[in-house]
Length: 207
Image (cartoon, rainbow, N blue to C red; front, side, top):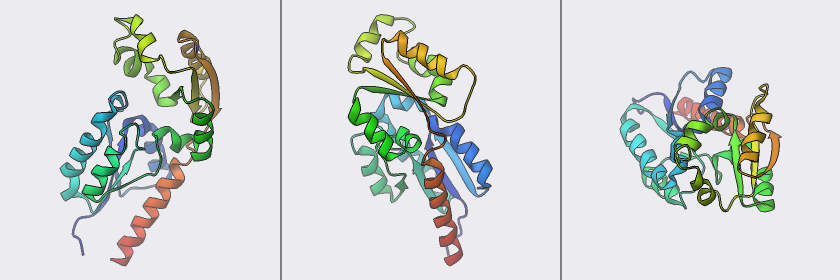
C-alpha cells in the first residue's frame, strides 16, 4: 500500500474562491489545494509547464494528484503533459465551462465565438489581472489590438453581490461589447470535484 496520504488538487487561480468554498462546505479535509496564478490565462502557453512543475514538486508528498483546469487555450499541450505525468484533469475546454456547464458554454461560444467571459473572481480583480497585466493602464490604445476579435462580454456570476452586474456592464460598455449576465452558481465544478473526491475515497478503502 502506498505510504503517502492525502490528495492534492492543482487548480487555476481563477477558481480559487469557489474551490475553497466547496472544500469547506463538503468537509474535504484530506484535500489540499494549490492554485496557480490566474494571470496564466493571459499566457496560455505557460499553463502546461507550470502544471508540470507543480506536479513534480508535490508528487512525493501525496497519494493522488488531480488538476482543475480546462484546456484553457493550451491547444492540447496541457493534456499531453498530464498524460506523461499520469495525472487526470476536469474535462472541458475552459475553466469557464465548469461554471456555465458544458451545454450552456457550447451554446454561448457557438452563438458568439468572440466572447470575453467574466466570473466573480475576474470581476473583483479586473484591474489587476486585465488592465494592469496587459498594460492597458499605460497604453489604453492597445485594447483595440488585444480585443479586436471580441464582440460580447458574458458575466458568469457565482454569488449575488450588490452592484456586481452593473460593474460588469460598465466594463462591457468601456470596450463597446454587447453584454449578457448569467447566474451560474458553481455549475458543474462542485459535482465534478465531488465525484472525483468520492472516487479517491473509494480507492483508499480498497487499498
